[in-house]
Structures are given as structure tokens and as C-alpha cells.
Amino acid sequence: MTGSSVVRAGIDGLRAVVKGEVLVAGDAAYQVVSRTLNVVGRPAVVVRCAGAEDIAAALRYAGEYRLPVAVRSGGHHPAGFGTNDGGVVIDVGLLDEVTVLPGGDGRVVRVGTGATWGRVAGELAGAGLAISSGDTAGVGVGGLLGGGGIGWMVRRLGLALDSVVAAEVVTADGVARRLDAVNEPELFWGVRGAAGSLGVVTSYDVVADRQPTVLFGNLLFPWTQLEQVLTGWAAYMADAPVELSSSVQLPPTMVADRQAPIAVMVCVSGELGDAGRLLAPLRSLGTLLTDTVTEVPYGDILTTEQMPPGWTPRMRNGLFERWVPELVEQLADARRRMPAMAVDVRALGGAYGAVAPEATAFAHREAGFMVNGVLLGSTELHGGQIDEFEELWAALAPEAAYGNFLSHPTAGDLDRCFPKAHRDRLAALKDRFDPTGVFGTALTVPPTEHVA
Ligand SMILES: Cc1cc2nc3c(=O)[nH]c(=O)nc-3n(C[C@H](O)[C@H](O)[C@H](O)COP(=O)(O)OP(=O)(O)OC[C@H]3O[C@@H](n4cnc5c(N)ncnc54)[C@H](O)[C@@H]3O)c2cc1C
Image (cartoon, rainbow, N blue to C red; front, top):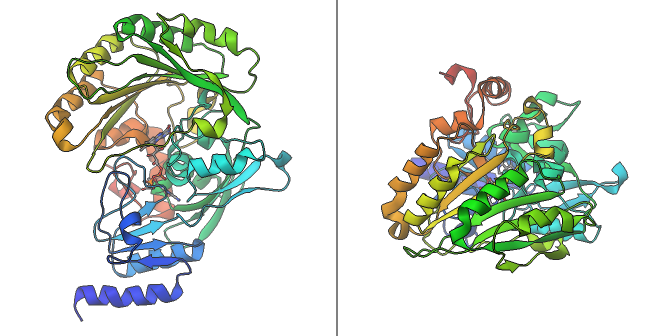
């Protein structure tokens, strides 16, 4: 038998034990689950797992044929981590149950890692509950919760992973483990910020918020007032009440010499009665062109992204402790030169910063602001500007970054995501739970013997 026919024979064996689906090229669903939002993969096999036993079978198969493993939930990581070429993709999409658990004040929700955040919000709305996730409905629970989760209630509730009280994970040895503050607490620490490096999480238990509605919308200001709007916004948000989460968005125009209005996005959650007072300083940042702020169900604020075929967005970000005044001119100048670049500056602090940096594998609790840039379009559309985009980030020189918003991570980015003390703890966890490096992406801390 040839190498590929041996692998093929192995697929039949895999199909015999897997309760979910085993998909290879040619199967109808393979096309959908072998790709991510912007990367087309060519895995040898995609195993759509129905539970921990299927995950263990997929891991055994990958080990037997020495194939690389990728883990896929919502397929939204901008680096395409959810697929590979020639390997095994463990897809958790079938694990999408959202269940309010008995006890726990009716607020503890078991969320399957294959659910999307749009589905989670929809399922919880009826129970008057919500979980702060991200801004997009199609993003998966697996990748967002395992890496952080900066959403519209981040300043009141912290990262999405700060509300996790337990997780179920299958480690590289195929063993299903329950993790919480008592059971395997160190691994529980690790999956809250570096889950993709340590195993396949099947579900998280999350404390939800009783938050059926929020005040949400945007305040538009003229582009010409960028300096006063951005500076005033940053000064206010550095110390704003935690009920207010906000970002400033500079939308791409895709046309040279054209600029769109500045959008100050706001979300007030928790006690809504005082919202007028909270928002007044933002409404007077400049000449207010449009004000769409209104009370809406939390689930309605999650957007559905549109990704035209062939678009390959390039994404970088930096976490900054304090607002740096030079950022205004640097971002304004870059937007003038790169009309295909979207900028999103998010205010952090509040509950996000109240968690000790060593409490979770996600480290950067000192950050007050995240600056996020996305160069949109196809290679043809933005091709000439990749160097310029990378030069901008070299000039901004952030010391810290958020791994979930990096499309082309480098070794330097791994250090920017995890400081030394965190890297040491993660390497020790790799030694215990994944010494041969079954799970790994460019943002994975390797086992100790590989640490330089
Ligand atoms: C349009 C868009 C909007 C976004 N908005 C936000 C936002 O507002 N806030 C925010 O914080 N982030 C946001 N993100 C980033 C998002 O959090 C990451 O891209 C995240 O990784 C996506 O999760 P996923 O499950 O869809 O990704 P996938 O590509 O399926 O998974 C990414 C990686 O996560 C790990 N992973 C996935 N599932 C599991 C699992 N079950 N167990 C262990 N590891 C797993 C694996 O390493 C996997 O390769 C956005 C991304 C996009 C594309």
C-alpha cells in the first residue's frame, strides 16, 4: 500500500469509531469546515467531533499517522489557525449546546465550544441573561474564550474568560478532564488565555449577567476633528464609570484622499438610568453629526461580518497602558496613506484591569487601551500597502498584544502576548500535558526543552 492509501485505510477505521462526522476532500461538508473565514486549508481529514471520545479518536489517528493537528471552532482566527494542509482538523462545531445549569442563582451557563456568540446570545436572551463576548455573532466560543474575549461589556465584566468558573478539556493523551479552581487549577489557569496550546476544550461554565438590554449605538463626528475627538475620548475613557464601554472606529474608505466620519461606539450596561450623564462628555467631543444610541437587546448588537471572497485581511494590534498623545498623528497619517485600513481603538480598564495579571494565562491587565488595525481587501487591493502597514506597527512599537487579533504572528508577537513569567508557567504546563507539542500555533509557548 502507498502512504496515502494507508492513511485512507485509517480513515475507514476512524469512521468506524467516531460518532460525529469524518470528512475528507470530496465530501460535501468538507469544503465548509476545511476553511476558516479567510484561509482555505487542505487538511487530510476533518473530524467533526460529537464529544470527548471523538476528540480522543482524532488525536490517536493524528498520532498514528504523525499528522499535524489544528482545532477549529468558529473558524474566525485571522491567522487561519483553525485549519492546516495535510493534517487533522478537530472541529468542535457539533458541540454547540447552551444550557443554564441548575443552582448557581440560575446564572451559570454551560456553553459548548462549537457555539457561535450569536447563538449563545440568542439562547440566553429568553432567560434574561447575556455573556460579554466580542462584537461579532459568527465568532466561535472556542477561540474567543480560550484567548480572551474583549466585548461590549468588557469594562464592567472584564474579559469573557473572567466569567469562566470551569471547563472540560481533552488533553493530548486523549484524557477528558474537568478543570476549575480545585481540579487541575494550574491547567485551568492555562486554558484561560492559552487554551489552544493545551488541549481541546469541549465546554466552559460561564457566569452570565442579568442583562437583557443595553444602550448601544454610535456617535459620528467629522474626520477633520480627529485630534480633539480622539484625545478627548481617551482622556474621558481612562477613568470613565465601568458601565460604559467604548471604542473609536476609523472606517476604511478604500478610496485615496477620502475620509469617513469618526465613529465613537458606546455600550452602557448594568444600571442604565444614569446613561445620559455617562454619555454627555462623549456627545460633546466635537460637532455631533449622528447619534444612534438606543436601548436594544444585547444579542442585537453583535454584528454579522461580510468577508468578500478573496479578501485576506492583515491584522495587528497593540495594548497600551496609557494613551500616548503621538498615537493621534500616527493613526491619522496612516489612515491618509492607507484608505483600506480600518482602525479600532478600544478602551479597557475597569473590571478588565481589576483582575491580577497572574490570575489567568491572559496577562495584560495593566492595559488601558487596545489599538487594532486591519488592512482590508484582497492582495491586489491592499497589496502595495503591506509594507506600509507593517512599518506603522513597527513605529507604534507596542510592548504588549492580544493574540486573537493577529493575522501574521511572529516570534516577537508570542513574547508580546505572554510575558516571561507567563511563558514559564505555560511551558511547564506543556511539559505535563503536551510534551510532544501536539497542539501548537505560532502563538504557542513550546515545552521547556524547546524554550530558548
Ligand atoms: C470579524 C471578527 C471580529 C472579531 N471580534 C472580536 C471581538 O470583538 N473581541 C475579541 O476578543 N475577539 C474578536 N475577534 C477575534 C476572535 O476572538 C479570534 O479570532 C478567535 O480566535 C476566534 O474564535 P473562533 O473559535 O471563531 O476561531 P477558530 O479559528 O475556530 O479557532 C482559533 C484557535 O482557537 C483555538 N481553539 C478554538 N476552539 C478551541 C477549543 N475548543 N479548544 C481549545 N482551543 C480552541 C485553537 O488554537 C484554534 O486554532 C474577532 C475576529 C473576527 C474575524
